[in-house]
Image (cartoon, rainbow, N blue to C red; front, side, top):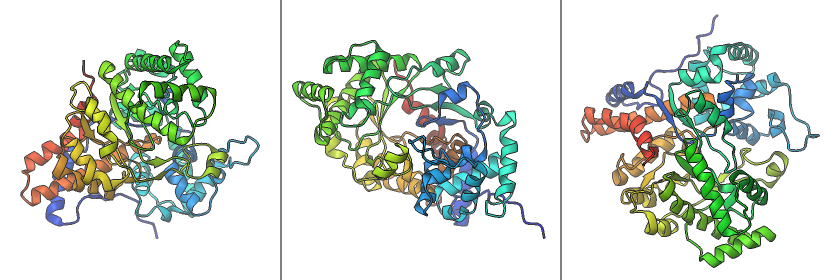
Length: 475
């Protein structure tokens, strides 16, 4: 007996109540095909410049995806068994990518109810035409189909960029990045489609491994002899301007806390000098990082870069995973964050200045209604960023709207960001956000709190208008 082909329900992630679902369908239809504005992500500009293919299924779906890998690790697999290469070149790593794919496919049920499952379903069915669910029995069949599909020219990254209808994509780049790939793309007419983002975290925490190497790289890239705190600030200003010249619209700051307390100039100079000559403790480093957020806001008044702040992640929670596989390998854990007091020094100085713009993200949803929505609902410089990372899920997005709209409204938010390294997941993530927003707006229409025309207009703004406006350059 032939199996029924695997398809996705057209009403997935929409409300279940029939009347509300009908309204949500109409709202969703108005936004489903709008261009994607992807202003916070980690796609490699070089891959786009070179128009790379995605290799095989394991290289595309599994090895680079820390969401997917961490679930399998939580069930007993080791990173190297899933193709994640250890830092030690002599350590074992699985190189049989078909076997890696089998390990994933036979554990498909682990992803039930997760956003990872939603994204993967969308990618496999909608993008790559897979018609059978992953399982131990279907693993090889799907692998062979995907391998053949990925080898075709229409599945190279630039063709998919067009197919996904991506209007603008922002990368995330180190302060010393030469931005040569962005320059090459700009020369080909892609300068407004792929833009860099300045991410200076490595320079702001002087207790972290690699800080001194980052300072040396900053000096080389900027041409500034970085030997003290004033020259450090000069070098950062120079690099920010280089990013602006390359098309950058924003900075990105992934700090441990939201502290923005400025240090007395003499204390900042002492901390920098101490770090240049030896280690500094975590308390002093955190104070310096908060000071640098304040200084970054000050710099944005001059160069116009939008400031994105997403604190509250204990990076590399497992020392063993960090030592074995390096950073960004799935052991980053959320922690509680306080914003009201922490942001006050920065907002007192710059929050009412029309030249300043700040987008706030969190993965501590307890602060949405208590702190972030009231801040974004008052300060004209502040937008509330989309649910991010662990909250980039159907439930997380719905709770975000429930907890923030009554205080901040819709128009003090920035629109959706996908924050992904997995290029093929971009349309899936944006599609999910559009469906959840359609569902939330349909409830307001069904309760006669909004007209249908207002709901459609709002959905279009959330999907397309607000992301563009939130990051638009101001001259």
